[in-house]
Structure formats: C-alpha cells, structure tokens
Image (cartoon, rainbow, N blue to C red; front, side):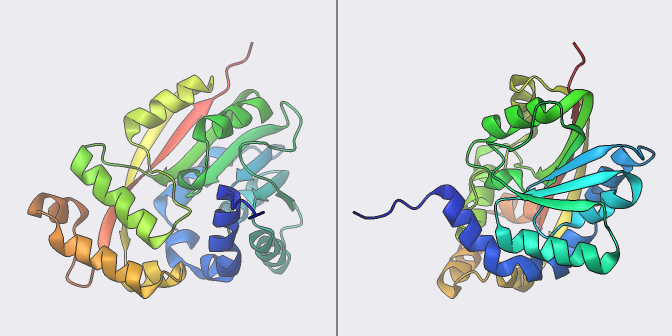
Length: 258
C-alpha cells in the first residue's frame, strides 16, 4: 500500500534541509515586523512566550532578552536543532524547543502570556484550528501577535501572489487578506486589538535559492511575471531581474478574560 504524503510531511521536507539558510536569511533575521513582535513582550520580564512555527528562531531570539521563558515550537526537528544551537551560542538559556504542529499543541490550557508567530501561518494546513489552539493555550488577558504575508485581496493580484508562492514552495497554503484575518481571529474567540502593515522587498535569486526551488518552477515564476498586465507589475513592483515587493502585516489580538 502506498504511504499517504501528509501536508506536514511536505512542510518538513521543504524546510528541514533549509534550516541553516533561514537562520542566515537577512529577510528573516531583521525587519520592522520582527521589531513589532519584540516590542509586544518588552517590559514583561516574568512572561512565558510561545514562538509558534518558530522556523530558525528569529522571534525567539528577539523575545528572549525581555521575558522569563520562550518555547520555540515547530514541526521540523531540523529547524529546532538549529534554534537550540543558536540559542546556546547567543547565551539564551531561557529558550527551550518543542516539536509540534500548530493545529494540535502539546501544552495545557492557559500556559502562555503571549503567543508570537512570524512567516508561519501561510503554511498551516488548517488556520482556524491553529488559531483555536492559540486561544486555548493563552492565559485569559494574554495576547497573540501574528506577522505574515498578506494577500492584496483583489482576485487578479491574489491569484498571482498565491501562484508564485506555490511554485516556489509547495508547502504554501494561502496568504490571507486583511478581511480574512479579522474574520479568522474572531472565529477563534480572539479580540483584534491592532494591525500594522509593512512592505518587504524580495531579491528573486535569493528568494528561490533559499527554498532551493527547481529551475523549471523558478522559470515558471519569471514567465508569469512577464505575462502579467501592468497593474500587477506595478502593484508588486516587479523588477527586470524578477525581484518584487510584497505586503506583510502584524495582527495583534487578546484572549478576553472571563
């Protein structure tokens, strides 16, 4: 009997072998959205923080100087190994790692003061389930902040974005629009508090090299870029080398106290 290939297996296959490149990625190691996540936990020295979908650990490293403990959680054991080693090298004894998918967390209810997530949710197989788990493990009055890519929302722009993301990385599920995010947070019982928008520039060769995108798929992305009408080219600011700009956002919400 043929073994079923799960979405989680696809995600792990994509990212496990690329953990070190994500640790060194300039796009992931800095940015206004990363600063926004760190600012949320600043002055909360006794807080326990969950970095959900931690990847190479940049959020954990940004939060660790300000809080009591950070739990770096990811489904990729290779990513978690990179996080643990980098935490030791940087002297962060308050970072621990746990392996898990977002949709079924191994933590009791009300375990964390904050849940942070960055560039992870567009890989989740079930966003609603992941947000419900966030609400479950947050303490009443606790806060969640999620930074990720955001769809422009209009059909043509949305289709282009989802297409190039999927061609680059088959573990991509969906970049949501602002409206979709507000609705999803509400369904999970999380009360939206604020949202900030950002814009990032992605250098094409680095973008595909980081994911080791096969040439045939990278060429397909360039072909799509070349075929798009001016409205799409202008919105994403697509350059002659294929580099482009993308919308991101940081959504903050709270779990209301009973």
